[in-house]
Amino acid sequence: MRATSSALENGYRHLDTATVYGNEAEVGRAMADSGVPRGDVFLTTKCPPDWAGRELNTLQESLDLLPTDHVDLWLIHWPGAGSVNADMWQAFVGAREAGLVREIGVSNFDATLIDEITAATEVTPAVNQIEWSPLLFDASVVAEHRSRGIAVEGYSALRGGTLEHPAIVEIANRLGRTPAQVIIRWHLRHEVIVIPKSTRADRIRSNADVAGFTLSDTDMAALDGLASS
Ligand SMILES: NC(=O)c1ccc[n+]([C@@H]2O[C@H](COP(=O)([O-])OP(=O)(O)OC[C@H]3O[C@@H](n4cnc5c(N)ncnc54)[C@H](OP(=O)(O)O)[C@@H]3O)[C@@H](O)[C@H]2O)c1
Image 1: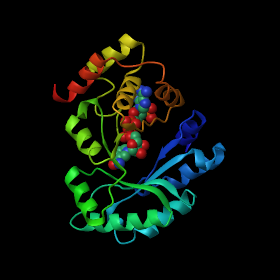
Image 2: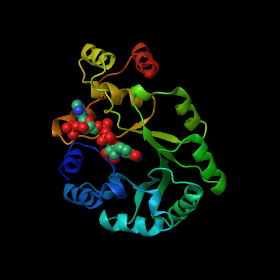
Image 3: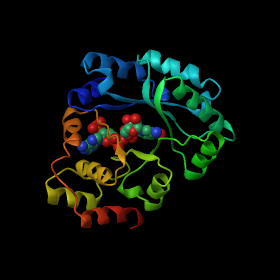
């Protein structure tokens, strides 16, 4: 709860939680204590495929815990097997039509799975939340989402050795920035949504302080090339 409170105090307005994180009540308390109006916060939660068949109950539990009358984005947390995804997606479409969620999306899906649920419902996910960082960059993944009108939202941007990678550290040192700031700026230049997380107030502040610098085309190309180097 302290991390969410600190994030809200420091201007963050995008909160990402999930049924399986078990922290929706804490996120809700932090939102209430912050005094930030609900309408100023973009709130995401997620439903795991294990809960297929009782999606709307799961959503109602999330809404009760948070507590709120809607979330801004509801995601299928990861793909299930067989027809589970299409069935869940149909329930997600119903939740959006009922006004319980503003937008619906998926997480950890690939293009084939996305096309399956889209074909079954004629509704394309607004977002796919996937693991993403310079070390995982793949232009074709960005392109296949863009061509379908799906926003890419990256998670674990600061994990997997990104913060210690010599090329990222070199760019950060040269620009007088932290490696985390370089990675976050790189996402923004690619128009990929980024959701960095920290339990430390100093890092929460500095991770948000990325407006005052840019990455050159040369640095962007170097970062883009790390996945294949
Ligand atoms: N859809 C999915 O399947 C999925 C999976 C994983 C995560 N997520 C979502 O993505 C969000 C973020 O992902 P994440 O927690 O995996 O990773 P993250 O934000 O990439 O990294 C968090 C880690 O980086 C450290 N850190 C943060 N800022 C730092 C800085 N400036 N310098 C050095 N270290 C820093 C944090 O440590 P300190 O706390 O000590 O600062 C923490 O260990 C999560 O909150 C979750 O909502 C979604």
